Image (tube, rainbow, N blue to C red):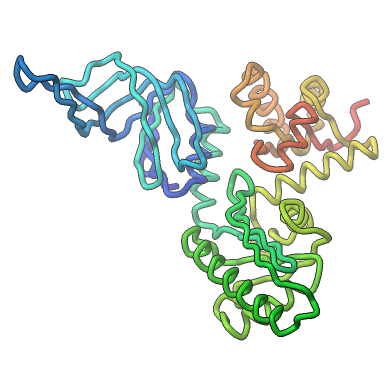
Length: 356
């Protein structure tokens, strides 16, 4: 994401959307009552004559929409913002009529708020920093099967599954030939995804020796790709294997700063502290009490709570924590760590000291 212009007097920030991750960040920044300005297209009826039906023409227009609904469609790569039109660059477009802006990659929009909250500014700043970091891809491989996922800002997205029937172990020549076809297919898929998603490093993991055989194959046949690959062990394959790689901290080793890896590991730390009955609070009541004591070192809040009925209370707690020099993290509900935090009430804190 790029922040193009800021107008503090009018409460406006103009940004350019560069990635799907940026749309996810904007989904958590744009709220009901905000005004969003963007170029769009609107259908306009035009009567050609009295005997023929009206023609519908699509016209380009610059609109301001007062936000009533915001929906993030990650599989359609779009953020949809719906509300009444409050300003238009064309007189024939009626003020007050409803319109939906479909915001996609490379679009430029301006967001206007009566008051920008600190966590909204922090999220935009995080999106700008994230655009300067390369993405991480995880490939979990075993005999004849591989799963590929990209670690995004909001979670882990499963991109592809490659499966080949390698045949029985007795037919060594045929099996070796099929394995090479499998490796070629997987390597080409990885290259295509890495180029499309702007991935610079790939973690190849798995429970057996297949990952080492694949790495040797890459070194001989795809040396440029092999240079971008890091090998890791896992006990299982599939989605569970992908999250095992994240929990092991391999993503952090590859890139020193990664949002999802940090979030998953912090939630795991909360769960470990709960099991030990030590420096932790979870649930709104416990966390609020800890915040009032100034005891919170790290506050974790699931993103869904920021749009719910307790939003004002949560924001107040966040400000208390920041005032006491604590760290505040809004955790995505789109990954395993977010799911576990949700089960704890959506809010938890690691404490500096006991309060009971």
